[in-house]
Image (tube, rainbow, N blue to C red; front, side, top):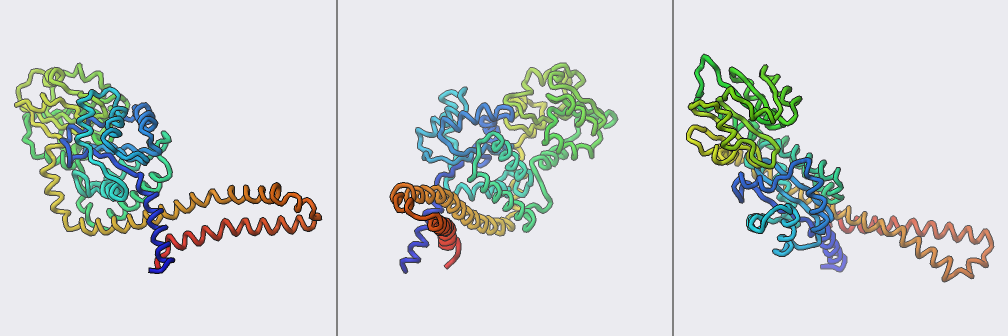
Length: 431
């Protein structure tokens, strides 16, 4: 191996490690813990600034990205600190200051940690839905983009995460367009509707089923597209924003109400669908008893919220046919088997994207390093002309001074551009 080759390999290794070694992901997903437990790590949108800015500061993070979906919560960060047991304890202590020691211990025990290149690969798998509960669902790419936009607006993320998310979204789009991973697209919503459609109608046909919807966000708006195919005797929508409740209810010629009005609903229901961004339970056993209005028939309850909107005691009732995200796993496995043959092609695309990202980071590291050159050269120039050779320069006639200035300007420009070109050539071009 020649000295030149050794230098090239050394420089490549140095820049790759500098770019990736401090990137880490702390993940809680459907693969490692019960889906209902993922709700412990959910932060409502209006609490992101209050919770994440102090977390970033106290944990010594230079960048932070928080992603929360129905089957995962992931904290992506750039940090010089290694995730030692002591560091993790302090991290989760500041992640939720209200947690008890037992809750902090649960987080420490259940967290899955990805570092460096493995962390980048994991995020590419996540955004491409390969790591999702429902492989092939496209919602995740929108969720990643939204998470980045929120954290970027709060000045939580930086240059590394910006470039990583850009690569991640481009890779996911390529997978969805160049493979059949999303053929006959499915999602948690579509799986829930499939399960719901197989549930026997508990209400007399002449009356029609009564639908009660809690929450008017994206998930319930999406499932409404499926529900409109059915015949409903009545539809009532409850939401924090009554305007959004009325907007969703209008699709069924139903009625919209504020979330507070749910406590006064007394006309019963046959199917209840709930998905809000609430940090706590919406439907407990006491409220459920009010909602059924003394009826003894079987009720269908669909809960797609993380954390769950419906209390476990309600889900376990004998007169309740409960459909939650955890119940959808068996259908999700069938979906995975259908898409298995496409996974290898997806992984190839991800491998290519990972290689390209490492190249991008090498170039970026060079650019950042080279930004210091102009200041250094200016300092050397001023030191030479104003201190070391000040007397000699003073003795020059105006014309000679002008020639000297031109020479120094020319050399300064070359000293900036030439190293940049050489370093890029060494780091980026193949042998």
